[in-house]
Image 1 (cartoon, rainbow, N blue to C red):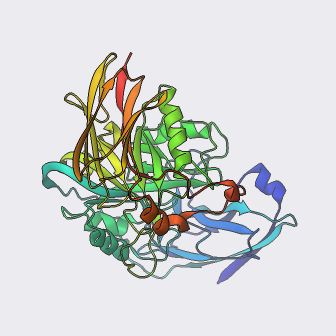
Image 2: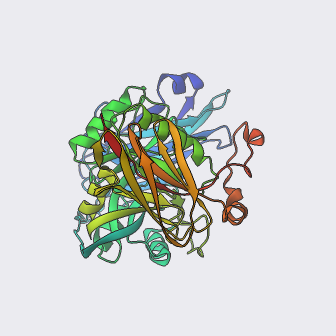
Image 3: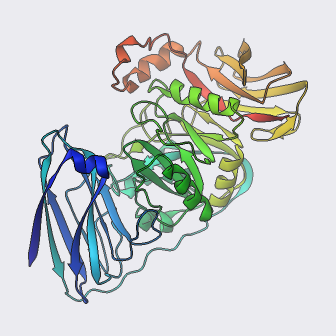
Length: 465
């Protein structure tokens, strides 16, 4: 038997709380719950969907989450043995459950939302969650990965199997799957992590005013942030569980509008460079110059389609984060991410860029004073190497060959990092990637063709005062 409830959602509801809760009672013995939502979906009317069980508390909750699909689905089921992608199967606790609506866009006139649910008590086995595996590929070296991808467990159409195949096709060594506000992609990625392709646990905390990736945590992290200071609550929850927090794509169209928490990482490059990544980089530069020490990473934000795409400028691994690891394992990847032992490059075959000051690698620190830095560069002949500290550009020179070493001597302020800027390769990259422009109100005022295109960004080496 099904039950329905119709509610008028208004902009006043949205202003009071971006999350709206619709309770319903689940009796003892229930083995499956089905929920559907109907509303007048339009460009100015977008409502997200999820569900919570009786264990939920006010923000920040540690348990009670049973699924989220954002605006990607209008129906779902949760059962003892299975669930819709994005939703957590398992024991159906009796008591007060709640459908949670995310009031992303509400029209001026409001919107009528109808929720229909059905309960079933047919016998079903209780199926547990997959356990994390710990694959290791021995051997020190540079390993390549993508730290921001999505499957049909959130708002992509493609299954995890397709994303796995795409990452293998791209030649990646590791992959973080950070579906929006859910962790159910682990059903596939826990048992399929292997020495050939190590999967890094991820979740993208997704709100209307900012996104952040959580890495290295098995638990769901409560995303129901409603105030600017909740960013600090988020960081505490992540660090309590031993994870890393990254500020995502701090640029149009979804910048980080919360207070800046104690973040471990910043995604300075998301999808092709011309998608406003110079804004993310400028904000990262400002944070470094203020004295913060935050490691730089990149990720494609690739949403796997329902078919395997050919290689190109807008697929998985564009950009690629390259890390220097003692071995390929999730623990080694997370440690190198936090330490800043690596760089971001345009693709899995993009330019190599590793800087050192003496024996100190990227992410390390040296005493203040005169230094001599070295940059090892490959596959960027004819482009420009730029050295940057807290004051801005210090020096630059044209890269003379495909296997080249550059140097800088001086007294940098606070940190030293390096960039490869396209010169010889500019016209080719511009032609291939200008479709990355996203719509913002002043896009017509931006000189995209004259915008410097970065091909690789190093992590900083810090200067101790």
